Length: 231
Image (cartoon, rainbow, N blue to C red; front, side):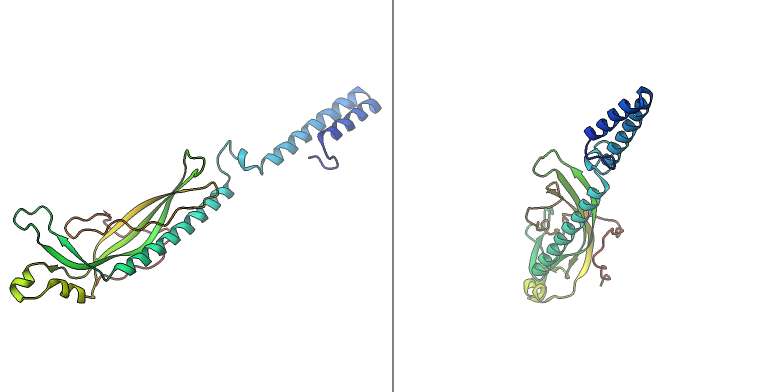
């Protein structure tokens, strides 16, 4: 509002008084000046209104807030992924050969886990939901690490050894391949995610991998840990 007046009615009262005191010509001038000042005042107030920012686009302060919430969510999910993988990395899994007509039921035993090495916040979208109008798109990058594969039948036949016991005693992991996986999170209007943190996809299969493979290491927007060298 104009300095010295509490409302537009006080402005118009002052203009009317000037019109009576100095005549119609002076009143016209006062009315025009008051109108310009009032318009400037309304414009100045509108500049801080996020709803009017660039005709409906979100205000930069809101975008910055959502970006911060997205990185907080990505970091929490990233740490949960790493904890989950650490808990299961010493489990021996059996990988059966897929699609071979003469080796049905054969395969290898090994330990494997995902070594998460970073993530990126890909985008922040507006959904059609009133309850969760914000959608955050986050991609996580990881290395699939395995111990030496132990053949299911070859060891028994040639060496009379149990491949499951050999695999259980293996401790040396090497990188089999690099992957990424993308997650979408529905959040409230403030960018807060109220759902449960997700567990990773089923682990890759030795003969039929699951995740999306990457040809080279990505440039991380928010890398949390340097990847270890391949052993």
